[in-house]
Length: 176
Image (cartoon, rainbow, N blue to C red; front, side, top):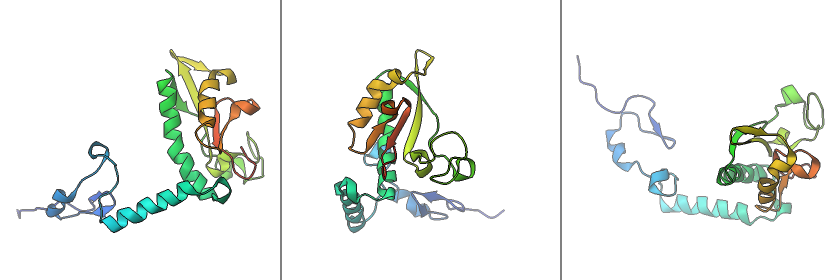
């Protein structure tokens, strides 16, 4: 039997193919334990990534595209969940994305929910809160978390303002 060495086929770390390249092991770095959690790369690449992120954050609300808002929402939702835990709640997920095959295209009401729902454009999340094992169903149960959410960014909207307490979203073209 011939000796086999290397790292095997299709070994990807941080998006890089390290298959068969034992020397690459010494170049692996980063991750949550190392600090930033970003891929290591040359300084020019890191500078471009930093500039792109900074530019996105500096855009005014009016300049933000749907994609910009979706990225912002994806950054803010983990903070929302962390905040819920800090307040003593446990969380499960309700609706996040509502696929057009089940719910209709934007502007079409095919199932439950609003025809112009931010769930259809990946800008809304329904969170289920639990306290001491009890599922909290009232809008008022979400008030503290909802008001905290609204303070995170000018686009953050809490559904408690329209009797949908477990709804957390970013506004887009008048949709909440």
